[in-house]
Length: 176
Image (tube, rainbow, N blue to C red; front, side, top):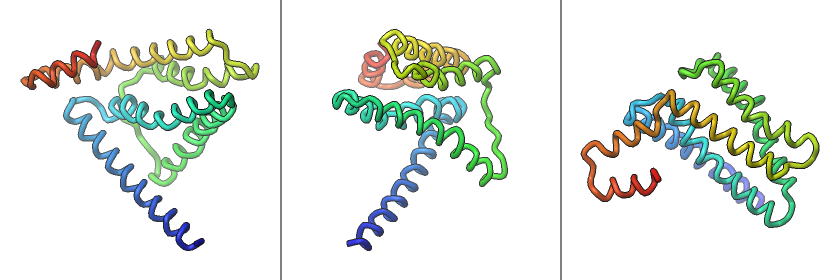
């Protein structure tokens, strides 16, 4: 039984690796089709898609009246990504350079959005006001990056460029 579990673990690892490669390739193709930077596409698309499992963990944790699990998961994941994954990628890739057009103000805003939950959790309580503030803070960051990159405008232009009526109606429904 141990060998079967080990084999399943290794097979799962390679399936996830291959799937991640397909996702990266798809986001790169999407960014080229929309004529935007890969950074902008990954910021929005991958940011949302990779957050879905954590959102469901959060929903289940709140339903089970154990939100500490969710908060620990989010803080732990943020620390691992910022202090382990990014440095490891820089080490393995002999350095990294990011091609983005974000100014210092927007990067500082992104850092504050990332750090906001840790500041609000210091008192071991996140109020309704703090939750609403963090969502609005994220929306400000989204708008700040979106107005420079024009992601939504680019998507709208590509969809309205000679597409079928059903695709247009689907987009209009999504846009509003």
